[in-house]
Length: 98
Ligand code: HEC
Image 1 (cartoon, rainbow, N blue to C red):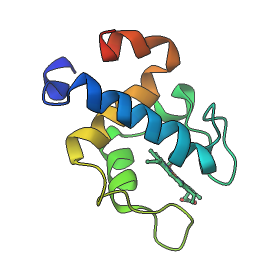
Image 2: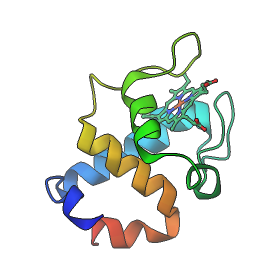
Image 3: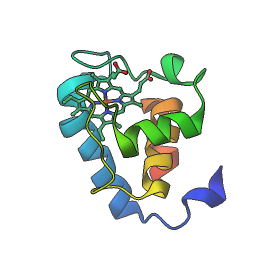
Image 4: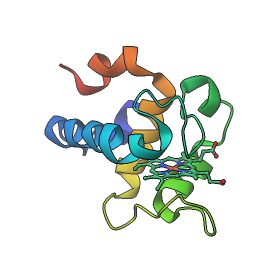
């Protein structure tokens, strides 16, 4: 999966993680344990299709509280978020190369 994320800078990755904690966390839980929205834990997402999850993030889910994030995220960034969510918090250092 490495090559896919080459265009996203470490600074932008840090922003994406903040978005995840603040904006997504409002509905999905700060620890992604679920709330108004379903849990986004690795074990929940690993069995789902990556592209379907990316599409959900970019387009939202009509008639649910899940909003479209297309105005704020590129497809590459949405993919990175899905991979990040699937990897789980312990892999953060690896993915941001800090
Ligand atoms: C206003 C509340 C809200 C916010 C903010 C929100 N979501 Fe959601 N999200 C939902 C709801 C509700 C669903 C379930 C929709 C359904 O019933 O199909 C959902 C579904 C999802 C799914 C699909 C999960 C699955 O199991 O199919 C993903 C992935 C997701 N959200 C990611 C995100 C990400 C990433 C962000 C931040 C960029 C975010 N969400 C922000 C409410 C929200």
